[in-house]
Image 1 (cartoon, rainbow, N blue to C red):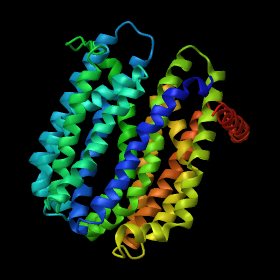
Image 2 (spheres, rainbow, N blue to C red):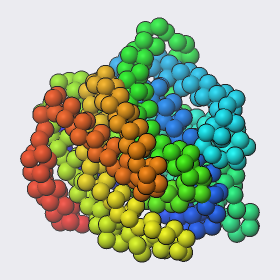
Image 3 (cartoon, rainbow, N blue to C red):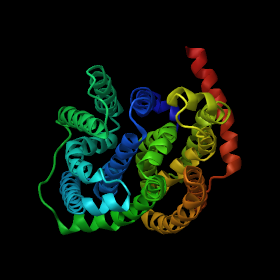
Image 4 (cartoon, rainbow, N blue to C red):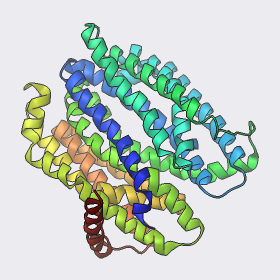
Length: 437
């Protein structure tokens, strides 16, 4: 498989994944520099809870849809209908639980204001419901351009609204950020309705056969996503429980820069999961090996400048965004820079594993990750606070990468030597593109 054959889609995909980075820059300039630490921390907690529920809903119904609908099957209508109903039921159930137990959640996280903020999370979930569903449908058809415009409405729209809110002198609390995100997510869903008009064809019924198929694959994906969400977000919860939302606000300001790694993972998922599903379904493991090696190599090379930036320019970056408020935060950013070395391998191996249909193996890995990340956070956060949260995050990420790569190599025998050899392909690719420019 030649990655250059998908260059046009790759450019749109890269542009799409650049939108969260643009949002992050706007967040740094317009939100972090303005909101008090405690308001920033309250919003970070609300946003984290929203993202966790969205991620779980995605794993429960939409990830199985992405895999099955990417394959050559005649029951696409039934797959879409099953995913839609299951996704709606899951979001509704989580919303009810969140509202009923909002006081308990607020007490557990040492953030009393969450009692009033958490009831707004269900509104955000339903505002983003159509958006999330349509994004998966578009990915199954490789309609990356439409994905870009849907995401642009949300990310650019949110930052634009923050700017307008600020100019009107109305932007001073976590509530403002929640309302702004609700508006931008809903607008993105409206755009999604128009984009999916000619590809949305659902059978409005649940069949036992399709529920069983979704559950057989989705339960393992769900468990894997639970573990991923735990190790990537529970640092906020540990910090809140031990130090309160103000410390969460400072830590979240540093972790904003980590969006670049999430962006790379999401970009790779857009292409690696559907491609690996199709290649494995026809038994073309030779092409799958080449795809795996090239994707890891190209992705790691692309993140090398981020590694250099975070490690050597952490101090000026943190000074620029905080006006001296976040004292001692630069070492956290330097540590996060190490993620540049493992993010591509983590993303590629994880998506290849699920593309192969090895959801059960992913489930086993997720259990190991869940146990280890809980131990890392429980030990490191009480001892070192925000620095401990950073160390726990890095240790969990490194362990997950090693375990996933080792498991994938049992089915797709790629090697580190093979990955390094693809540097020559990357160099040749750049020379060809520059020659054409």
